[in-house]
Amino acid sequence: MPIVAFYSNNSNPDLQNQWENRLQAHYPEISLVPLFSDQAESAITALLWKAPLERVNTLKNLKVLISLGQGVDHILKDNIIDNEIPVVRIVDTFMAKSMSHWVAMSVLNFIRDTFGYYNQQKNKTYKPRKEINFTTLKIAVYGVGEIGSVVVKDLKQLGFKVYGWSRTKKNIAGIDCFIGEDKFKYLLKSCDIHICLLPLTIQTNNIFNNSTFKIMKHGSCFINAGRGEQVVEEDLIENCQSGHISLAILDVYRVEPLPKNSRLWEQENIKIWPHVAAETNPETAAKQIANAIKCIENGKIPPNTIERKLGY
Ligand code: NDP
Ligand code: OXD
View 1 (cartoon, rainbow, N blue to C red):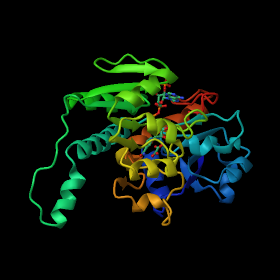
View 2 (cartoon, rainbow, N blue to C red):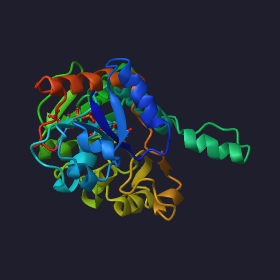
View 3 (tube, rainbow, N blue to C red):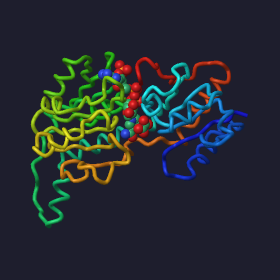
């Protein structure tokens, strides 16, 4: 019977049961046990979201670690986990579409000035506000992977001029895709809306800071659903307060849940979402997790095993 050590920092007390039920639909013998239980000692698989890694390291029978999300930074963090253990991530088209919807909504809220109209309603003001011409608007998407590649195509479908930036060159019809530091700066300088969908690595840590914000056009919109650590939050606040960034829409933060005393909460032109842009869906993701466990049992490398040296 495959025993899976389970941990999620999600507050839903029924989450382990939900996952177990979903996984059993694809692999009836699977049993999920809490990471901190004695039974976890015999687990060969761990299914994790933001788990205490010191505990994971004590489980000597583990043959694979599976992220309960598309990002794996929570597992690779601080190099605590043994380098030899394969790390598998979820890659789910449901999540990519869900993110695409959130990004499209955020972009549309910016160009149609949704928050300006909400404020007018407070004073019963009935008047049109300045509209941005979408035909001349340029949108940069940083990170054109499993999620970003869906986002760029959907934004193009909505009629926007979209640019992509990634580590290796992409070829996506109708999207100008770039790589490298110079092109990163070019996009910062020439685009009006900047969307971060990058994974957190040594290279992307703090990538949005005062110097990169300063390169952006005055009045730019900044959207982050990658990871909080990619943004120097104090620098973002400064640039939002000066109006250099006219609107920031955030889903992820350096510390989550976002602490009550964070100054981000107080900024009129910073909109806060609680890391929900693309939530993991047990219904759509269970099959691939069950398959990954079967692969490990059969001595095969599961699909979506990450390359440790890349860090994502
Ligand atoms: P992928 O690994 O499929 O894509 C990552 C993209 O970023 C790739 O295009 C990759 O380039 C690019 N990239 C990585 N490092 C660099 C770098 N140094 N310079 C330039 N480009 C780089 O990841 P996903 O699309 O599945 O997910 C991306 C991230 O989104 C996750 O890691 C997670 O942090 C976040 N996420 C957030 C969610 C939310 O609800 N807020 C939900 C799900 C994910 P290349 O293609 O060349 O490898
Ligand atoms: C993920 C996330 O990485 O939800 O899947 O952030």
